[in-house]
Length: 278
Image (cartoon, rainbow, N blue to C red; front, top):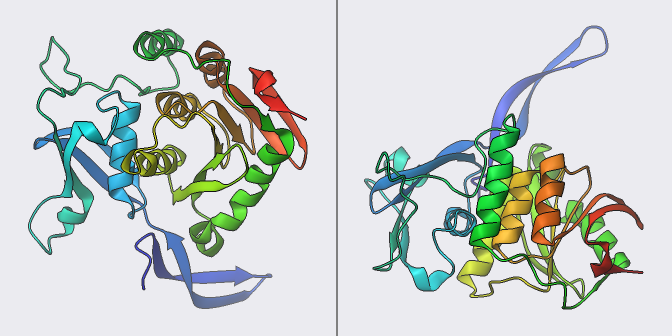
C-alpha cells in the first residue's frame, strides 16, 4: 500500500568532486488542507496527507470550537469524487447550538487559540490571557510521572517515525500515558499538525481530557504546542529540544509541566517540576 505521506521523485546525487548519479528519492508530502464548517472556510493548513479527520478534530479542540465528539455531527472530505481538491478539503457539521468563533466586527470566523505570528509580544500575552479565561489551569493534584518514563517516551519517539525514517522530513508527536504505554503517534511536516492528529485521535476515542498523559514532540516546544496540550488537558509536555519563551509563559500560567532537552535521563524542567519524580 502506497503511503500518501511519501512521494518518490528523481534526484541527482553529487558525491566527491566529480561523481554524479540520477537516483530515486523519497520525500515527505506537503499539501494544503482546507478546513470548513458548514461550507465556510475556517482555516487552511499545510500538512502531510493522512489522518485528516484526526487533524481537524484536534484543531477544533485547540481552537475552542468543540469539546468532544458530542459536538460533531460529521467530518467528511468534500468535492467531486476523483477531483484533486476533494482530498484536500474537509467540511465539518456541528451539532445545533455549537457555534464557531465569529468576529463581531466582520462576521467572519476567527481563530482564537493560536498565534498568527511569533513577532508580537503583546498579541502573545493576550492569547495567553484569552486561553486562561477560556480554560481553567490544570490541577496540581493527580498522578506523578517517573523521570525514566519521560526519558523513555522521548527516546522511543524516533522508532515510531516511519515517514521520517524513509524521508528525513517529518515531525512527530506521541501521547503516552504515565505508565509508559504509547497511546497515539502521528507524523506530519508540521509539528503542530502532528499534535492535532494525536489529540484528534483521543477526541474520536472519547478520551478527553488526557489528564494522565504526556505529550512528546520532536524538535522544540513552541507556544502552539503547549496551547494544544492545554486544550486537551495534557499536564506534561516533553521535547528533544528547547521551548520558546512564550511556551514557558503559557505552561507556567496553565500549570503544565514543560521539559526540554530530554536526552537519556537528563532534562531541563522549566515549569511545574513536581509532576516528574525520580
